[in-house]
Image (cartoon, rainbow, N blue to C red; front, side, top):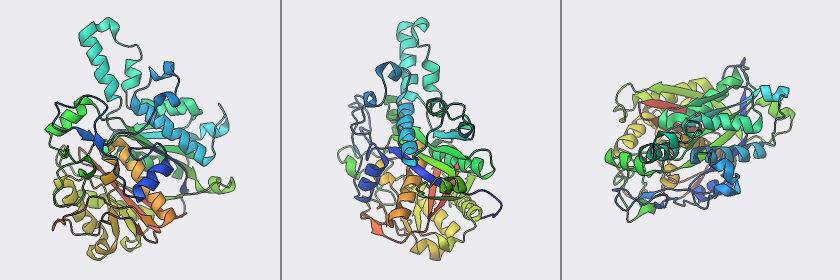
Length: 417
């Protein structure tokens, strides 16, 4: 790590996931190997090929927002704002309007779809009731950047506020980009994370048609099985994850509790196919190597990898190869690797943030969460995926991998405080 750049630490976390409506509950259930899967209740899925997903449980928007405000908020914005509130409270931070600190604080949100549910609803109104009946706030509900904008308005964050839309790599990119803003002195505090509310009639149908989803409708808890030989696709998830990133000296000066440090960030493109990874794993491997170089670490330093691990036939083989290329065969065979998507499902634009939180908690508590439903080894996926039960390990450095449609690869390296 270069000595002339500012260091970035994490001082707050917030999460709304299929495992729990806050970060501590999510982590506890993750370590316990709990599946967030079940039959779809969000809409009538009886005529769908895939009728299972990892939905939020017991999330009541009216506990967080007035009814009048809810009419202006798509679920993806609701999830993001709730996670932001938890993360800021956890960090012990608030910003006065027009204060000097507010000018040095911002937001980067990673989003895949944006307000898909609201978009579908507005199109239905347009077609059934005519153009005069569409909502005047329809566009602000739909656009992907609105979650970051809403967070900045609610918390008086007047520094850099942006949005990253790189599919399933989005919130990992958001964290990396936000860390760079602090490193180069453009901000002192950044909220970074992602949100997704993709369990909709259309998205489920489209992903199923693309044969990306598991069809284990009769056994949802065992549907997501990353790296297992019998995997047949991913499980759709939803929710949000947010990290408070802070310049290290500022955090220490105010006595903040520090979860860990953002040490490295790497990105690359496969430049190969709109949905499939480039065979052989060279694209993700370059992002992993770039993140290690950015952190100033050798591959041997990595103790744990939170894999992208989608439970699709193509991804898991490709990622296994990428890990071997980036870390070398010897390190790849000794490092603990797990896919928490086996429990949360694939949270798309929110995945990277929730999985970065998992890495920070793994470092903090010395526990690698499991890859559940790992039952039948795949000869092409032959590494240590922490099968079925969490494992106590001394974790000093962790790597988080996220890859998205379009060939986007984003990797973070996180370290002990």
